[in-house]
Image 1 (cartoon, rainbow, N blue to C red):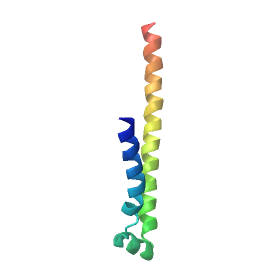
Image 2: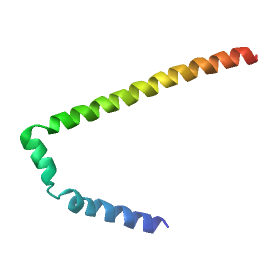
Image 3: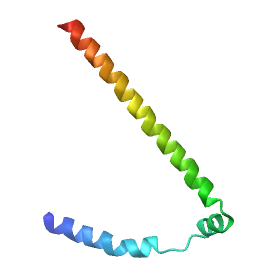
Image 4: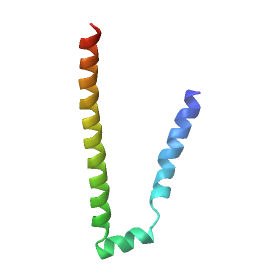
Amino acid sequence: MKKYFTLLLFQLLFSSNYIFAQNVDMAQGLRSSGKIYVVVGVLCIIFIGLVAYLINLDIKLNKLKKEFDTKSH
C-alpha cells in the first residue's frame, strides 16, 4: 500500500508542472488591465472577514463554555 501511495505522490508531483503551466487568457487579461488587484483585494477582504468571524465565534463559545461550567458546578 505504501508503494502505491509513493507512486501516486510522485506522479502528482511530476504532473503538476504540466497542469499548472497552462496559459490562462482570462488571468492575462485581468493582469494587463490591472483588475487582478481588485480580484485579489476582494478575496483578501472575504478571507479577513471569515477569520474575524471565526475568532469572534470562538470568543463567544469560550464565554458560553465558562458560563456553563460555572453553573453546572
